[in-house]
Image (cartoon, rainbow over all chains, first blue to last red; front, side, top):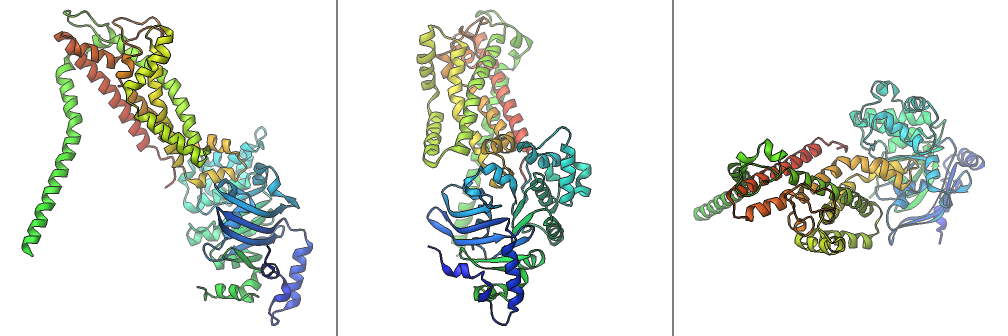
Length: 282
Length: 282
């Protein structure tokens, strides 16, 4: 059932002898000793009869940024969308395996509570057709987090965390669509942060944005990891290199390799990873 | 070669001309009807028409106040019954129904939409008029609501499905339940479209005559309650136009003009709502 190859791929001993084995072993050991925030174990996922993920196991270290890279259709977004169980809202899908958050299997728990604790930002900005203020307050409202008079406070705090406060503070009651694309995406990040998630999932959050808006969001992520664990899917390898502590490479529904980002980019242990990184792929 | 070009040009011109003529006929029909109504009934549309009761044949003047109010009552009744049922059925179709079951409901709704209105009238007569032993506005409202249900269900479904999936996922990802997502994000986003569909549906049923002939019948005077035979504009047109009196014919033309005017106003205001309805991001 489980392919041994995908398991050993994260094992540092398989790394080329020329690499500094001690360093990467230390890093791997450190990753293993600190309890990971989330853990996915032997995930198989099906769209109807199509198997999109093959036995994927991956750990997400607390307060770290993990990037998932790979060619289109490799399963990285599918994998990410299982981490908050948003995939189960699609018809005719099935998951096998275990995903834990702080050691508890999220597949057995109440899905709305899971999604409050694990926030998500999507590929295209998707603000609600409401004011900026109401967009931010939506999550706290439906999760019963509003106390008398704390709405304005939550909105300001969330917008500051998403580095949007200065630009938005004078138009909180205007439609969210009055913002530019990059601002809308930061609004969506602020909206996700407003419910104090422990994990933030981002599904190619910059693919619809220009380089300046992208840079803002990347800066933001690096600061945000102090407060939550971040998983970002990106097809932009430079982006992974800039923001991620560790990077996982997906190919054809399998996790080929997961390691510290500089190792993945400078000295990957798998041939497929190296081919992809160097652009020799396909 | 030149003869082929000539033939091509001739075909081109003939087709262009005939499509143009057909387009002209389409547009001019409405204006012809409108002009004819104004020519024949324009003079009789005065304050009396809206405030007075119909007079006996031979007496000049009088109005159709009872029919205008009666029509409003019947259409209001139909809306109160038909819009909520159609709306919720549409929500079910768009959001909850499984593949097979949705197909069944959708197909049934389309069939119901295609049932000749006179058959709807006979049905309402059988289930409401016969047991109650008399014609009534209630029966008329019931008959028209049967026509409104499939119209509003399908238009609600259509506009809900136009809300991007990303918007649903945005709300679900914040921990909203499915119903909460629909009620607080999806329906508000589709609000303008849904309202437009409802207005068009109401405009459409307000001109129906056949179902009312069997149900609310008609009345030369004010109806004292909803359970009495009640005058309505379409039926009034029918009875006045088929009577052998010249002055009644004029009143029938006037009633037609007023009815068409009301329907046009409803249509135009619905279009204005939707054209200003920028509730979704581009």
